[in-house]
Figure 1 (cartoon, protein in one colour):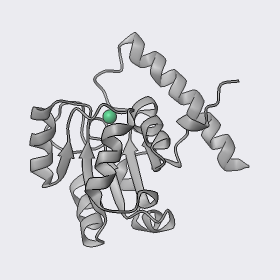
Figure 2 (cartoon, protein in one colour):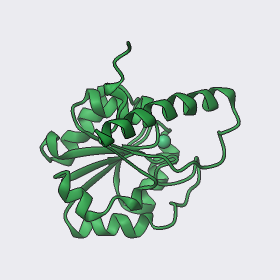
Figure 3 (cartoon, helix red, strand yellow):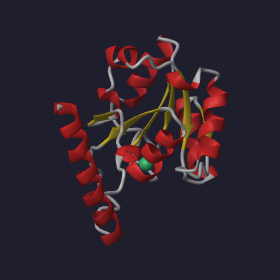
Length: 171
Ligand SMILES: [Mg+2]
């Protein structure tokens, strides 16, 4: 059997602003690496989802360090980062470890206190797990790419992994 543990997040949320400060303390998180597309905003949407700005403000007030890390290009990522006044890595090449580790070093927080948050198991979660940091998956589905066959297939595999996660939770 394929070892799927490497694809399983530490926790699944519907959306980022469901990650409460209590949850952050419970997981002993002091820094976040945040994906952008379908995590903080719709794909290529310049504006963040409702509640994201307030959520980031809560993190800031509690001295939780934040870095955006996206596989998207410089123009998209830099504009979004500027809007939220956050540092960023564009063309992140997730799931490869190189930029994830670089991001961790920029945060200047012990790696065991860092969590990556994203919507994609094969980039954000897998990349975070192989980099030995915590991983949160957000699952709220947004319109846009959903119609392509590749995307549907990917979502089906993700659903399978998510089900495994919930089985693990019940144990
Ligand atoms: Mg994404």
